Length: 204
Image (cartoon, rainbow, N blue to C red; front, side, top):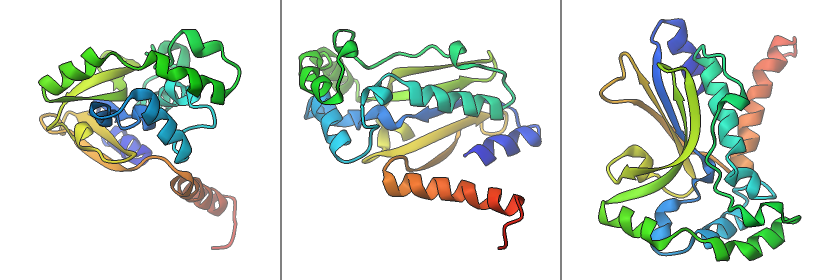
């Protein structure tokens, strides 16, 4: 993902926008049949969230990804420059433990009108990070997508990233795959360690 962003910048294929759906979208499409609090609890039990799901729901992880992608695209942004729509309800933000937070979360499930409106318009909800290269800004927010959109067609805890550039304009370049879980994370870390070890002189 980062290699693609860097290579497009290197060859002068300037980015116009980068959209990445967050691991923390928590299968919002399933909100048609279950509640937000249930989806969050299931994701935590499956190991797809941080130990405290609020770290994901607050958008911190997504905003870091936005910063990384923005900088790879040549933008000079800081975390303080990224507005974030937190999915953590205001009242339970100060609760000490993650377990207690999950116990209180059902009281703050998303308004049924939101999901009904999406269902009526054939849309789904996705929690996304956006890099707007033209206006040199980024953000994290909950957005609605038509069911035909690549972000709406994700299954399980897959992630997608869409590059809109001068050449990939009418149809963005889409990169997708598993975006969470211990094995996937470990594999990603290992793939970063290998070139670093080679650079430091480790035998191949």
